[in-house]
Length: 208
Ligand code: SF4
Ligand code: SF4
Image 1 (cartoon, helix red, strand yellow):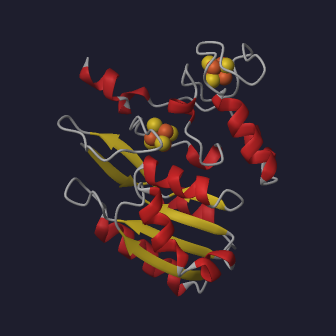
Image 2 (cartoon, protein in one colour; image 1 turned 90 degrees about the horizontal axis):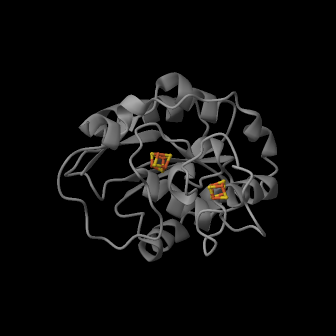
């Protein structure tokens, strides 16, 4: 199971400041946990600022076919936005980021593990529920699951021909991140200060 928890107000404000925003709420795993009230309040405030081009509330955006269908009617509102702000787990954000690959897609939530049964939905992307989502710094590609070493601050240096040194069959996750950010003209993001991960939110550490 997992919990989605809103990032701090300050973090979300920094993502949307002076920008037009399209909002996606995913309630597919609501029975697990979706921060409904807090998300609603925050979105009301954003709407009051007049910069929201549209909001959809849907379910299972982690299913690419379902997500494309849901977003289809809103493509004009999405085109008018600078940022698509997604309230979901890390898988949902990655699925939308891949589909809208030229758009800045941001995670409004952190994804936190809970012990117990995991869903059985086949997913194209992985979220390891690390508790401190990095997708806003990595162009919507998860560094925890797309990199064999779960590196957070860039490539390890062992990449060969774009493949991972740990698994030569796999594309290097950090090359993917670099290419995505370069395509979006957002390479400056990689200058973020070295970020120390809060391992207290890590499910393996928490289980010890
Ligand atoms: S960085 Fe990756 S593992 Fe962590 S919450 Fe985001 S998608 Fe999940
Ligand atoms: S080669 Fe790339 S994916 Fe593999 S461990 Fe190094 S940075 Fe991570």
